[in-house]
Image 1 (cartoon, rainbow, N blue to C red):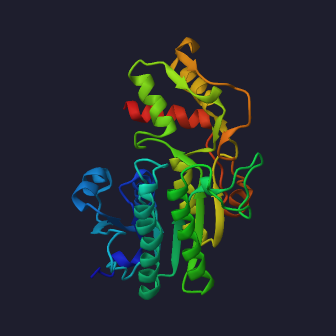
Image 2: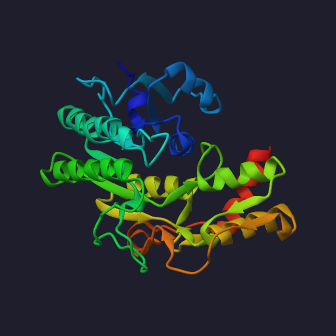
Length: 315
């Protein structure tokens, strides 16, 4: 039971608090004066990761989306930010579909039931901006979600979570915002992603390999921009769905060139294979007009974001 002094500050519970977004969000919440309940699978590991933010306003509790029934104490919680998710080792492996749906879809539903039953007034859900159907135009929040081109098992599980959140919101159990982040990059990002793979090649002295002529495009958003969007939702208690991206799709070729320029390396270390002819591959850019207008959102320039990431990872 928390004392009266602690309850003067809003208490925000964060799932996935030790993940890429979660750890930066916890830092921002603590610095903004919130009480924070970090909901994590491994409390000891999370305490190690978040040791720098170890202050009385930060509490930890074990939480696993796979648990059925799900048990989580949300007493006195003002808002839940659901940043936790299962991301499969291979986004194209159909054997990962069951775990994606069990954890990301049904786990989210079980969490929502706990939020409803505890009377938590506000909920923020991190979905996936790459779930839109293929398009050359910027994807708006009203455009169809149809992730059949890439990562269908993971992305459809995130979309199903959206449906459950919006259903609960429409039933007026609580207010809710759904954020659709683009491809997130930044300090602490796990290996295997586009940006982290290229950085790994640079650090090991390898040439940067760009396939398909560099035609693969993706909207890249810095992790701190995602955190700012979440904080804006909490500040405004915003409701509805918002794209959170840079507003433009960056090709793998352009990303590689920017990284080489920032690192001060000659372009001879860039190897491009495959044809540059043909349609763009990957995901559409996100239209971020709604987030700009309603959340005061402004994305970080990609070059600035990459430079800050390189500085922080080197320190």
